[in-house]
Amino acid sequence: MKPVVIAVAITGSVPRKKDNPAVPITPAEQIESTRQAYEVGATLVHIHVRNDDETPSSDPERFAAVQAGIAEQCPGMIIQFSTGGRGRDPSQRSSALYLHPDMASLSTGSVNFPTIVYENHTSLVEDMAGKMKEFGIRPEIEIFDLSHLHGARQLADKGLMDEQPHIQFVMGVQNALPAEERLLDILLKEAKHRFPTCTWTAAGIGRHQAKVMNWALVRGADAVRTGLEDNIRIAKDRLAVSNAELAEHAVLAVERHGHRAATTEEARALLGCRPIAPVQSM
Image (tube, rainbow, N blue to C red; front, side, top):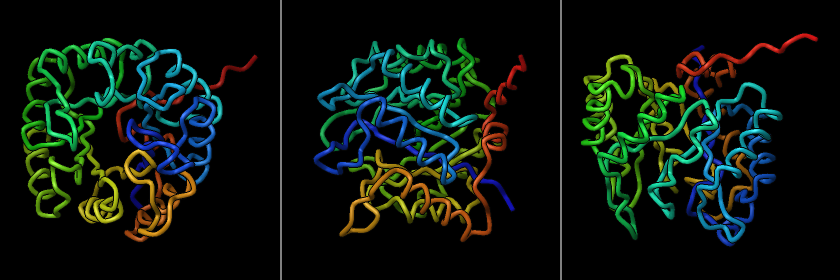
């Protein structure tokens, strides 16, 4: 059976405790929520950090605390930092990359979001890509628009990333890419044209999460993404009780398509991350 990476986006920058009490905010909550998801099969965690008032933060100390806790409690799990821009000073979006996470998200162009323009100027994108390369961090290219694939191609042509990026199509954000199956086919065809050996996944936002995951699995995606960042509900009338519950549903979706959740070793190999460091004997 084909191994598929289960990625869990635990917090994000938008949902608050008032929306779902299970959203983990403090580093301790984020570490515990990740551990629970890891135990049911998640092998990649996507991390945003928050201030105590739940607003988005770029504080490297918070990223470091979450990173250390996850590395201890979830051996081998791929740790991916967000460099996303909602509520964060652009100059600080890459401030934690010196901590050498395994991966980091990278948006290669601007796009409309429900209440803001998510601005990613070319100079900012190139600066973040350069830091990821310097620190040996694998980028996950976030695609909110077809042109963002061309932006990624330009980064590769400039030597700022390699020819096998991990690409994520984000579908269902209001004012950006609609969650329409035919659009995923267009995006995937263009991605494979620009980067024939890329790995890929697709994320559906909110009520679109399950159907986009199924579309991706039908098309042979290398990973699926779930988590409270994207979707706070299990059903229209019920909130998810944890990131682990959403991860369990993702594992079941993978299995329904005849695949299985990847191990940490498989996930790292598949996405080109550093192998797990061997334990040093005393």
